[in-house]
Structure formats: C-alpha cells, structure tokens
Image 1 (cartoon, one colour):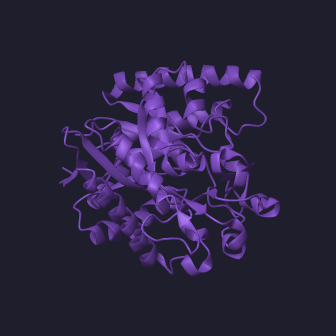
Image 2 (cartoon, one colour):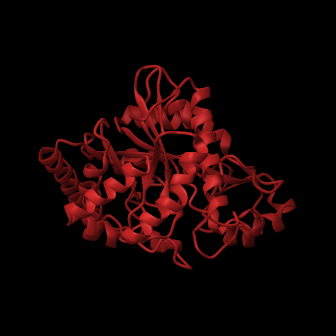
Length: 384
C-alpha cells in the first residue's frame, strides 16, 4: 500500500509477515494465499505491501538460487503484493513453543548474523518493485545486553564494516540500494535512541541507520519528538518504522488478574515503570515484584482494538511518532511496517478464530495505520 506525502515522497506501508510461522518456500507461498490476498481484497487496494520475514534456512536457499527468487517475485506479482522491506530480526523458529531470549541469537558478534543479513539483501534486490527508490532490512539492536564485552564489541565493528562493504558491492552489482536498520528494544545493547547514537556512532550512514519501533519507543518511555530530534542531530537516518503499540497498565494493583492473562510462554515481554524507574525482563517478573504503575509492557497489541479494560494501548505514542517521522513538512522515513506478531498468543478471548479472522484483523490494523497517515496529510495512491 502506498501513500504520497505532501513533499512528493512515496511512503510504503506494509504488514509484517513474522506473525506467520512458515519457514520454507512452500509455506511462505501458502501464507500469501491464505492471508495476504484476503487482506488486499478486504482493504480494496490493488497492491498490498509486505514486510516479509524469511527464516535463515529459506533465506540461504533463496540467496543461492536466482530461479527461486524469480519464482517468489512472480508469485508476489500475481497476487498483487509488493516487498520493499524485510524483517531480519528473528533468525529462525520465531514461533517455537518458547522463544524468549533465543530471538536475540545469533547476535551481531556472530558471523552468522552478517551472512543472514546479506542473504536477505541479495533476495530483496530481486523482489523490489522496479520503481522503488530503495529497500530496507530491520535487524536486532546488536544483541542482548548481557553478556556484552570488549571482544564482542570488536567483532561487531568488524561485522558492521563488512555489512556496509557488502551492501555497497551489491549496489554496484545490481544497481539497487538496500539499507539495514538497527531496532532499539528494551533489554538489549541498544535499548533506546540515546544508546543508538552511542553504539552506532561509527556506522556508514549511507547503508546503516535505525528502525524506530513505536511500541519499543513507548516501553522506553521516550518522547517521540525528542527521540526523532536526537537521531537527526546525530545524523542517524530513520530507515524504517515498525508501526506498533505496546500494552499499558495504568493501575497494576487494581488489574492484576487482567494483566496476568498476557503473561505467556513464547515471547519475552519486557516491562518498564514510568521513566524506566523499575525494569523487568519479562511480565511475570513485574507481576511478582508488583511495583506501582503505570507500566508499559513489550507486548504488541492490535492497533485498532483496545485491550481488555482497564488496560490500554500506547496508540498515543504511535500517533505522535508517526507525526514526528512522517507528518512533518518532509517525510523523514518512507518504509513503514505494521508488526503485530503476537496475535496467536493474545489472551484466548481476544485471539482470532481461524485464518479469515486473522486476515481481517490484520487488514483492520493496516486500515488504522493508513487512516492515521491520512490524518497527517498523506494521500493514498495507486501502487504502480
């Protein structure tokens, strides 16, 4: 789905496919037919954008085989789907029964992370629409914070130099530009935009920048305008936006039973009290400690539907973040991905019943994001 900013910039809006578990090409093609096509039809748009997630195994297979890449591109085109961005954060098995901290491995000190990311870049240049200005890949914020030592840091810097060299070589080979965006997340080496300006100070900004996940920004209790200005002063480009909302708990003491329904075994749900005065690596730890509220929980909730009362969603931060990044006189970012990967672990009463309900729910999220961008002055346009 494309919109046009008043400055003339084309803004791409997509939905993130890491909500789906498929990790081989037949499974990925099946999910396109099961979810993406019904979403496009539900939204009444000629072309639907995907923030495609490819696990490491299928990424290596596609990167090594041009015929497979052509097949994937044909399948996308036939269904009215386009890809300008890939989600390179989860490496594999993102829908295992227990993921938790495993999602942060391999980190950027491990050569496997560089290989995977360059595989994704090789794939993306063949999936990009002919008229797309560039492609983007979001990735983890270097790694989990502990352990993080001197040798790891040295390996990371070598990896980031090699990443820039690989992306530059790919541009020479193909004529297409791909940038990689590091995504601050609570609990990681880069938790917030201030840490991004420190840990990414030496990167080549032509190829490397930041992915602003608006749920993560909320959980870090960052003011969106201040955060965007901080990145701009540091010269770090915002390459991609994850359009997401976190769970907010105004009164934990009075809503413990409701909050506890969101404590689940698959994903990590980092929890922060106001101003990050108290920090917990998972929701159950916060429930055990019981600090005063409000809390913000790294739990991506559907954008268009309020959580179970008295809980709330951080859609105020989402709207302010989009206003700061896209709603100004110049669009600071043109790649947006709605990334609610938690649909299948929502409390049972809120989970969609069957593929059609999930497709329609995700379509409603995209409609919410589109309408918010229209409120900021953007206009929908034909994709091609």
